[in-house]
Amino acid sequence: MHLAEYDLSGKVAFVTGAGRGIGKGIAQVLAEAGADVVINALTTRHVEGLASDISKATGRRVLPLVADVTKPDEAERSIHRILAELGSLHILVNNLGDAIRKPLVPLPGGETRSSTPLTDDELRVILDLNLTATVLCTRAVGPHLLARRSGKVINIASFAAAKGTPNLTIYAAAKTALVGFTRALALEWAPYGVQVNGIAPGLFPDPVTVGEAGYQQRVEDAKRTVPLRREGRLREVGLLALYLASAASDYMTGQTLYLDGGLTL
Image (cartoon, rainbow, N blue to C red):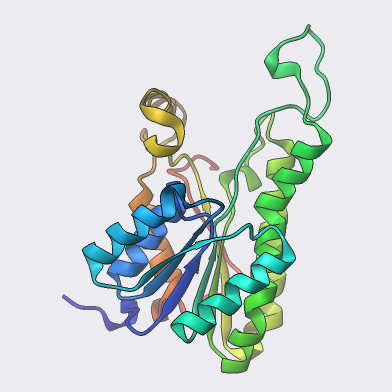
């Protein structure tokens, strides 16, 4: 059965932070649905091989783009390069993000790793990765989408926006801000036919990111803490992103969808 509303043929998608983890899962599904995909990372370590693999599997154009999109000039250059090489851009997936698990201030109880607070540099890095990059990329692509009066922006937030977690204070603050950014920008751009939505994933470990031992530990953690008693699969985020990237979601904007196995209930 073919559902035309989910067909992304003729569309170009840009996925930030796509060399591994959730971004990789999203890029793979969007390409399978017919989109040409630009996958971004800070280094060539993962994106070049991944781009080749996705292209071979789907027959789509997949462009690896190495850039630090937390910097205004690099975010702008990235969008300009996509428009120059692929001719257009229809879907922006702001996936870049990461966490540093440390408390905000020193905690009583001795000198342990868990009591060492975030440094000023670490604080800035968390905000840049999880909020600033999204704002910069969205600002860079905005004029193109608004002029065409169509487009999709998908912001990847986190369950941490709705569920407090120790040692993730600044990460949670950034992801919560992302939910507010999504809601407000959706209203700004709705009159111009551009939808802005978000996904807040729960536990989606990737062996490439955390190693096999770390992955197995997170699988066990998910069995213990997630109501559905399992970890999320990267493809599942990709499938939800496909809905938000496609015509199937044309009547949805400003929403952040929690894909977390019930973790935030």
